Image 1 (tube, rainbow, N blue to C red):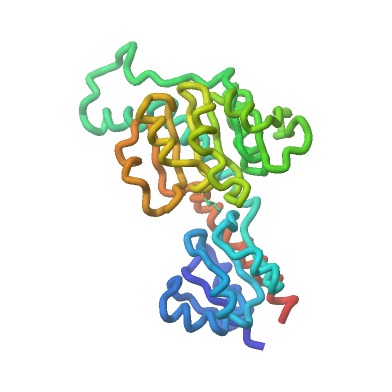
Image 2: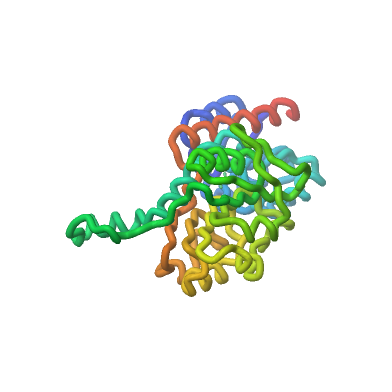
Length: 311
Ligand code: DGY
């Protein structure tokens, strides 16, 4: 039987081609282009990126649909309830991007606290006149508490990294079971959110965007952070109130922010462009060659498994 796989873009490595060879025929058409819309009507597998939200209308327009695959670990852009109701499988890419994302959060932490952006600009701009005792002083991390929202694999991988810097990781997560979270070399306390916020010199987001975490860090919550705290978001925009973050950066209440994701990305609030003490990245969490290939492999394996059993 012919199985139609509809993807929106080529993926790194050969996994997508192999999927097309196994289940002819495979179409690649830009998301929501006329060709994509036409092919959707016959598709048995829809493959999308995290920036390509599907809704119930897409499912209704695809009567043969058996599986929705996303080239991401996050699934907040998918109609999960509608998929469940129709028995459509959802395949994502957990596990393979854990280290890459935790590495990027660490890079943001060091970039913000050690003022890498300003230092680089000084050198590149030809304005560096020499070493000085008070030049671009940053903030040390050892001995300070690093609050981590989300005790899943990425949150725990980030805990290992900050632990190696001499920080004290502490967690909040949605389930909140147990007093501690094992993260490899040790166990860290699992705290109520308010408690965690009040203690965190650094707060890093590693939870998915769900109804429970949407706007979790509103202005009131952000104001509970200690003065000078540093905020990192490599999870999803929408978990925190970016307008409040911008106000708190401008007033000096927040010590810095490292942002990889934004509520309306790729559009960003104009305020980010001149936000002080902020390092801004374009959603690079999983962006290593190895990881992106592993994500393609895992996604295509998952889609293959579904199509093989349901055809
Ligand atoms: C994901 O896969 O959901 C990540 O946001 C990629 O960086």
